[in-house]
Image (cartoon, rainbow, N blue to C red; front, side, top):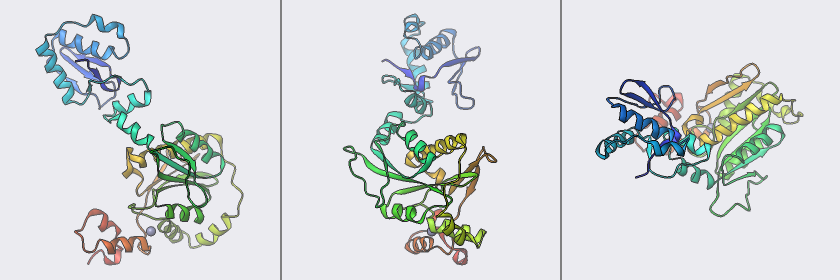
Length: 315
Ligand SMILES: [Zn+2]
């Protein structure tokens, strides 16, 4: 059997008879009780990912002991018996313990639609075009998508709007039935998320109601902002916002869909680390009431409890 360590992991000596697989702190399985021959074999198993020449020098460990060591590596999820990928993305996701080839197949069947103008939308579209998606297309006025490759279906829409989530963006994406990741570009900061849409906890109206709670003038300001020219944006912030949005898209497509369900991140020169905001469904929004109503006859879940308006949560 030809085997390898997932993600091209290296094997590092920790002490006599003890090695760890991988160099990521806190994520590297430790094997103990090893002989010097065991250790040498494991170290060379790690080296073979980086140098085929060294494979010939592998120390001899008996077949029974080799099977024991392979079983131990398998138990830790770090052993593979297929050909090693050469794509760094695949190796990286393998190292995370993910079926990287299945992830790549999933992305290759997914189209992402981008609606918006300006440098962040352009940079985001370019980044998304480089991560193995089946297609990245502009989101048309009616949300119609034509000319997708065979087997590729729309999976998510990103909108990039200036100042506020544009009502036309929100409506067009809502009608498409796709998961919606809004990106809002304001003069000094960019907000990515939260994810909206079908089976999500929030809708665009929830966000608008929360904004109005925080500032009663928000609706009047928003109407005016729709007519404003785009604010000038620092080049570095364009890059940072586009990369964050691209990561959020991949999270929503399956890497970590829960991460953006009720969470947004604001970044800017004042918040380069990102200001994380958790959102609740707005109690006056119909989306929460409708969902709570449809779940009234079903057993209570964490989700339905969160969606009930405060006035009915004690009933
Ligand atoms: Zn809502």
